[in-house]
Amino acid sequence: MFYNVSHRRRSVSILAVIAIAPSAWAQTPAIDTGDTAWMIVASALVLFMMIPALAMFYGGLVRVKNVLSLFMQCFVITAIVSVIWLVYGYSAAFDATGMAKGAGGLHAFIGGTSRYFLAGVTPTTVRGTIPEALFFVYQMTFAVITPGLFVGAFAERMRFSSVIWFTVIWVTVCYLPICHMVWGGDGSFFGDLGVLDFAGGIVVHLTAGVTALVAAIMVGPRK
Image (cartoon, rainbow, N blue to C red; front, top):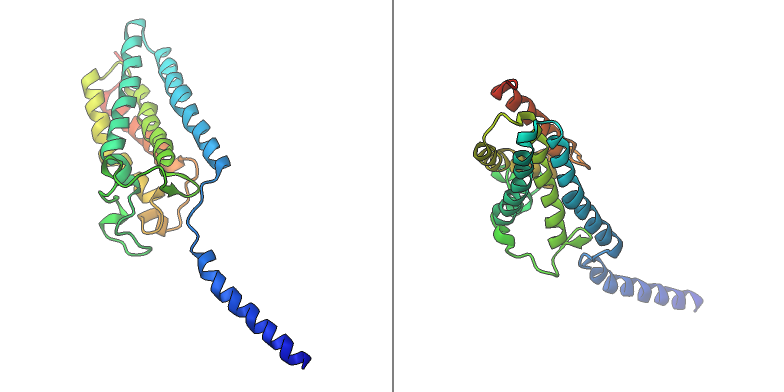
């Protein structure tokens, strides 16, 4: 008798777990308020401190007559890269359409087009534990700061228009594919190889450093 009662209770418990488990496993990603608050702070620190700081740092390395020109380069680059990121940059870097771990193909090197002009990004869409709109802004700060890092390599030796065109082409051809290959997740080229870049050592600093070296060699020393 005792065995039958215990057996029935176990059966009922197992059925209850089976009934509840699918709904628990299917939970949608939830926004973490702590993560969200910190990402807002981190994005603000880069946009409102790092970019002006870079402009002032490079301004102190050039002749007085070129200080304003260098300031203008830093801030115009910020504006232009922000527009690029909105129009197609975010999609090219982080759109995972057609991607699967080990699948290879074109999307292992560049993202899709479904996020152009932030298509599909709403106040309720989530990326990890933060709103996708905030993720967009946070990643935009990386895209903005990276060209700013190599501006000093050719300060006083390139025309303003040349700097702007070079930045547009460089972000499109160099930064976006590398960003996708490293940070694109499963199905991306370096992601499938297990490469981890938590703070931009590859995406930001390596790309900016190599670009600065090549640009400095190409334009030559200051006269």
